[in-house]
Length: 540
Image 1 (tube, rainbow, N blue to C red):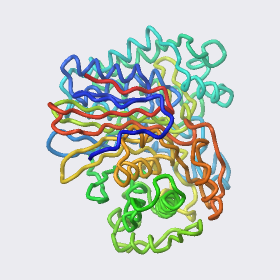
Image 2: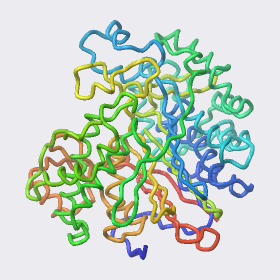
Image 3: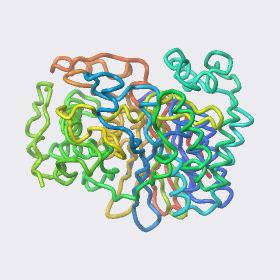
Image 4: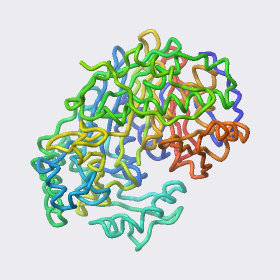
């Protein structure tokens, strides 16, 4: 791609060019990954080290009790890993109705009854065992050092930490772990997490066994029982991540790959399949026509995703049916260029998150994402090992007659998931590993940034810096304050109900991008990191 490297947007970041690169939303995590590369490790070693470190440095977004997904190019082929968690064996609709009443529509947002078995640690182990070069304990050493010695809390992380404190201070173990002075740390204040260092050592020494059925799992079981939860060490011991194929969508001669359901990555593929019916490049880059068209395509995508996507064993349609070209063409014809619409689901033919990326000069590229879901997840933190547990169970439905019956809670089932890594290919060869964090912003961010790169030739850093919009529901749309005023006015005139927001972290996601420039051993990569978080791209 012959990018236009001019950047018309205000930015504090410049693209990085190097043969070995790591890009994350926290500098210390990026440097943890870089240490592995300098020690002779590969991109998988770097990604695992960065992922472990960022559970300590960005605990609002992820912890040792998170879930994860990964897409990686091993030098010859593409692989997908689903390390999202499963429901405890006790979880049925009646379990929740008996505790929370017959009118409950979902499991609770916080507390132990929102916690499914965390999959991130198992994902690290699986990646290391299959593709890593360095010993697994070595990958966790930077995170252990950071947890024991502490680090000075960065501005964006601190802002979100403070915002969550009042809501979560009453959750089991939260104040003990994350409010060491009775409050959130200040910017530049030292935070130490020795309990998590203890866990990381046990995880490393046991290749993850301590977490899945061992001492850590039993500690979580005891702690959950003390606070009304039913998750057990046996639930942990039964957990396995899954190697899965990716699903893809052709677009402008490229192919975007995502992990299939139970995740929402298919939303980006649906949107691109719809946008492929239009000549976006003929429309003004940041103009109202281009933005309106992308918004309407995303709306159509979400209408189907929220209706059909669940644990794949429960879905009534397949991803292939949802991505059928004739079906997507029929959905594209619903778009009115002059009017915003609230679309319903179609009828396919039946038959707090962190994202990081790493690449090395051998050609290995890793697109990795892990999350505790909402800020600090469930709010529950097992104190002896510092395990901050996600709240992915809140993503299940309790209503068999609701919008998506396939997402009904059941023992051992995976809930609808928001976190999605992405990977771009061309002619069967790897081109870019990337992702944009932030709940339902993720497929919207994948789509908006990719359109900028492929239709308008913007560099990854410029595409990352450009102002974004975020579709919510109905006709409701959020836009960043930096978006062109005439475009915002034009969208409003077409019926979009717009709220302009200044909190870019919370509402518009943050991305990391690594674009392969040619032979990795010669030209290397271009890396970009989003200024909406504290992150950094590093390399050599």
